[in-house]
Length: 118
Image (cartoon, rainbow, N blue to C red; front, side, top):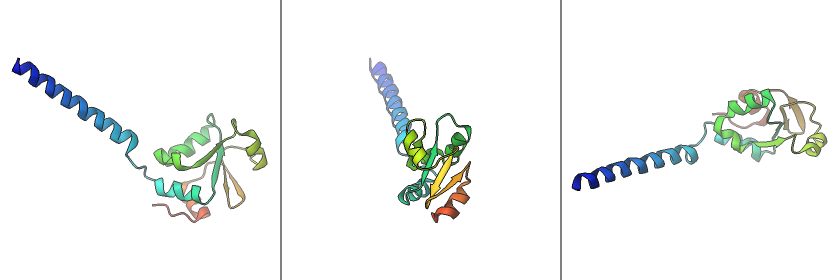
């Protein structure tokens, strides 16, 4: 009986560690470009695109998990906002009132925005 109780405790402990490990990666890990993405958004910079756009997907991949901080406007869901912003293709970045069409390297976004890329 003692051996069965010990085995249950070991399996339970491993299970709890696995759950803690999973949630630490899912919620607690900062992205590589979190501060940069937050700076872009704080400056009112937006990325316009769609979820089906190949270059939009590549742009998102450059940011990795930090993309969640980007002010992204989905033009399939917000057609009027995109029309009002003069969006003619995807992705488009609006920076200081100017539209920049196409996939932008992070270094170019840093140059245009004044946000520090680390």
